[in-house]
Length: 359
Ligand code: F0G
Image (cartoon, protein in one colour):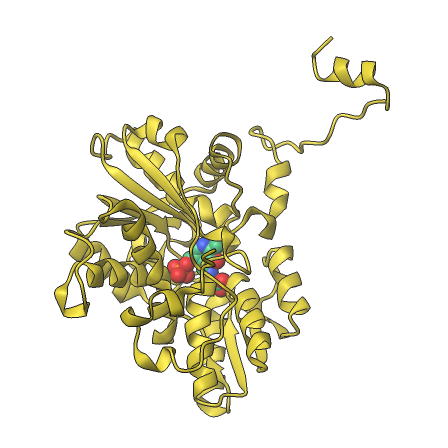
C-alpha cells in the first residue's frame, strides 16, 4: 500500500536540493481537496476546499516547516525561533522536536487560540508572550536571529515558501489543471506568495515538466479590522476574531500584491460577521470544521458571488488553512451570537426520543 511520504519526498524534483539532503517530516501534505456544492451553488461555480487542517499539526504551516527545519538541520542548526499568531508556533515546535532542536516562539500577549498554545507547550517550545502584537513579535524574532545562533522559521525564510508551494502542486495534480480562481485568507502573506509560486512553476517549462496550462486568478482575503494591503497602509492596532490573521504589517506584502496583479486577482476585506457566517456554512453544510481565519477565503468568495463578481461556472479552489479544533469555541456561538448549550435529558429512551422530536 502506498503511504504519502511528506511534501519533500513527494515533490523532491521540484524543490531546491538543500531541502532534500536531511529530511525532517511528519508526513505533511496530501490533504483532501473536497467538493463543496454548498458553496458552489451559492455563487454559480464549481467550488472545492483544500482542507489544510488535515496536516500533522492542524494547519498548512507544516508544509513550510518540514522544509525550513530540514534546511536548518542540514546546516547543523541547534535552535529556531518564530513569531506567531499560533499555528506557526505549533508547527515549529513539533518539527523542531522531531529534529532534536530547541524552539523559541514569540506570541502576542493574549489573542492566541488555546489549541495552538497547548501544542507549542506540549512539544516543548520556549514560549514567550510578548508585550505587543504579531508585528512586534516578528521584528523581535528577526533581530534575535540576526544577533544570536538561532534560525528564523517565519515565512520570510524562503525555505518556508518552497514547502508551502506544494499545495498548489497537489491541487493541479488532483484536478488535472489549475483552477480558474484560487481563494485564501491573507495574514502575513506568505501563503499567497507560496501558492502563486507553485502555480507559476507548474505552468512554466523552466521549472520542469509542465503540469498546468494556465495559472489561476489569486483572490486573497484579509479581515476587515486587519486589512493593511486592502487599505494600502499598515494597521497599527489590528483587530479581528480571526486571531490567526490579526496582522497589521505583513512581511510578504509586496509579493502578495505581485501575485494579485500578475494573476489578475484581488485582495479584499471580509468582516468578522462574514467570516463567522462562512464558518457556519463550512461546518453545517460542507462538513468541514475550521478555525475562524480559515473561513475568510470562503467568506470572500461568497461576498464576491453576491456582488455578481464570480464568473459563471468557474472552477474555484479555496484553501481552508487550519483545523476547527485549534479554536473550537466559535462553534458554540449561534447565528444570533448567543451561546449554544446541549439540551439536557433523562437517561430513558422516551425522554431522548421526545427531545429528538421522534415521538
Ligand atoms: N490561516 C491561518 C489558520 C493562519 O494561521 C495564518 C497565518 C493564515 C491563514 C495566513 O497565512 O500569514 O501566510 O498570509 N498564521 C501565521 C502564524 C501568521 O503565526 O501562525 P499567511
